[in-house]
Amino acid sequence: MATIEEITKRIEEDPANAAFEAEGQKPLFQAPPTARINIVGQAPGAKAEEAGIVWGDESGDRLRAWLGVDRATFYDSGMFALLPMDFYFPGKSAHGDLAPRKAFADKWFPQILDTMPDIQLTVLAGSSAIHHFLDLKSKDTITDVVEHYEEYLPQYFPIIHPSGRNNIWIAEHPWFDAKVIPALQAQVREILA
Image 1: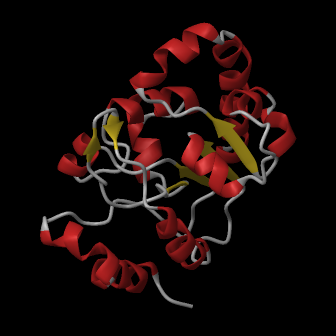
Image 2 (image 1 turned 45 degrees about the vertical axis):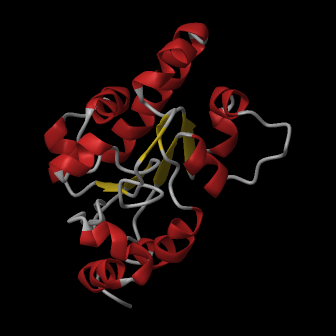
């Protein structure tokens, strides 16, 4: 089995990532072998890419609040894997950031996940992660999936993406703060304990 350092080198040398590497981008992810909770998001945003820290932006601040953990626990405890659906900032579109490349996770996740045998929960933050990991029916909406998160436990916990772009959705769905976030925090506390 390859080490995470060997996998990272392969990612950096992959011709599919050459344009990002030429711009000075490095793959943003965190995969400690001791991880118990895997957080799968979309792709790093411009601020996270600039800082060189996955979830190193306002979305990350909100995500940590939703999880009920501080920054040190999130980054330094060895308990959290942070695997965006793409490890490079994909660029901007007229309506926000471009979507992560579809083939990226298929190619790299199996290799990386093999290095973390103790993952107990994968938090799926946003539609890209939810659609990648869950076998959804065409009628299933992200709202339905998040509202009925219990159906995907104990392996997966789907949530909306913590971006500020979802503030209206959060305001329109008060059950998310009242029911889903406390349940997520309870799951995280139990695993970290």
